[in-house]
Image 1 (tube, rainbow, N blue to C red):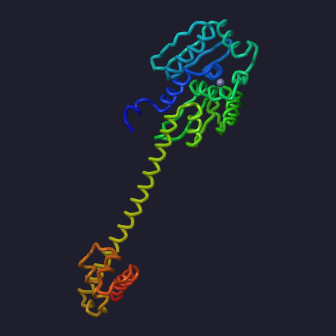
Image 2: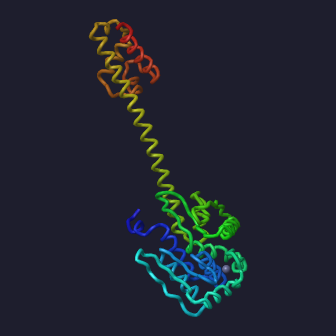
Length: 305
Ligand SMILES: [Zn+2]
């Protein structure tokens, strides 16, 4: 993975991709995207309407969406910590925005008004806006988690249902004062990113998964082979030790000719595998035949201690 890609967080790159698409949507989808973006911001009512984000492109899109309705784009403020905020400061402007989405001042509670998601094509765009405003996704290098965070249960519920209609099945949990609609399965995250048009990031998840898989497979194979080698080295050492003792106490000459021949080979080729030893014998023998003969040598050496 090149460093340039890692400098900008994965979530920021997803949002970059979404912003790029969102600037160029058909009117119906742009309306739905704007609605998602405003509705899922920090607040969306006649008394307060604002967005706080770490993603500059999202702040710009929010300002533009508001500007399209009230005729003047609100200012984007940047905090010391690098967060961007945009707010609609005048009440009459907030009412104008609300009414553009069919919401009256007296409407209580924040829900998803489906009238703003006119057509099939608009659903993905609504999710685009919502994602920009209140979602994040972890880097697939670390883990798989995509989550939308809502201040109201009803809004979280509505989002859950809407995503289900798009065949994305999320889960919901409560965290402090927020309701989190989240996805942990990488394939579902890929689907959602594809749906909102963050194709490059979706592909990146797939690619990283393949790399992780390969690495795991290689590690398993290496571990397996190392364990095998350890076992065979330990066995060969034990066999050579047995032969040495048999020679020392003069019992080596009492061994049968076939055992003697094998013992000589074992000493001569301490690192040879059982199969290789079998091929070196004057009358070649299978791996298991060698195994039994070597075991016999070892047990003879151990028998008369
Ligand atoms: Zn549309």
